[in-house]
Amino acid sequence: MEKTITIFTDGSSRGNPGPGGFAAIITTPEGKVVELGGREEKTTNNRMELSAALATLRYIEERGLSGDIRIYTDSAYLLNGITGWVYAWEKNGWKTKTGEPVLNQDIWQELSGIVFRQKLIRSIEWIKVEGHAGLRGNERADEIATTFADQKNMALFSGAKEKYEKLLGGSLFDKNPAKEEKKKLSRPKGKAYSYVSMIGGMIATHKTWQECERRVKGKSGAKFKKALSPQEEKQIISEWTNPKKDDGHRTI
Image 1 (cartoon, rainbow, N blue to C red):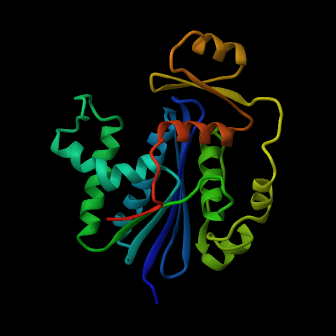
Image 2 (image 1 turned 180 degrees about the vertical axis):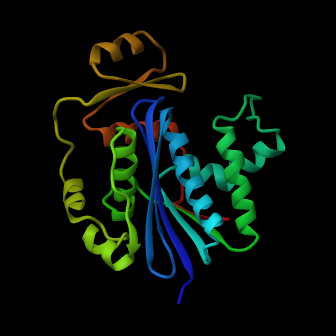
């Protein structure tokens, strides 16, 4: 029997910065599932992605859970950082190649420290999944993170895996049929939830096109896009923040 702790993590923010939330779903080798969630008043999507991973590894370490660790994330920022960038940052005194302080340094330092300690006693595998593609584990983590970002309360599950899967309607690794069908349809037209713009790497969200237009008009290299939902806003920000393609599966 495989002795593996399986985890799905996600982070969300309403604006960049704005109110944010993070989430994790932990399944132990013994068949127990625990959901984690938290929020910050003013944060970023990337910071929440890191917070989800950190909260998860803290939980595992503090409780002395046994088994190898396998973490599924839709964040290229988290995966690329923890499997590569942190080593260069540490050698460079937590400065980037251009000499700027590393963003979210406090979380990166604690996260890399706990990963180092855990790697002494077990393997940690980081796996990239496609966001908003109907994978139940990722969709549930997104639901928790966005609920916390919206400053709402929700009951988090802790109990038997069998009961959890009944509540979700299937395994964490199943594709939600409704999401699968939605992917087959063309992107619908509709009223904008928000507009996302980026100038010189700085991302902002706007409630109206007029606000967005004032920011991007006449600016060289400016990007902008309409989002039809909170989830699409998050996806646009993630794609612009993490443009690097990933092979989807890395191990450290």
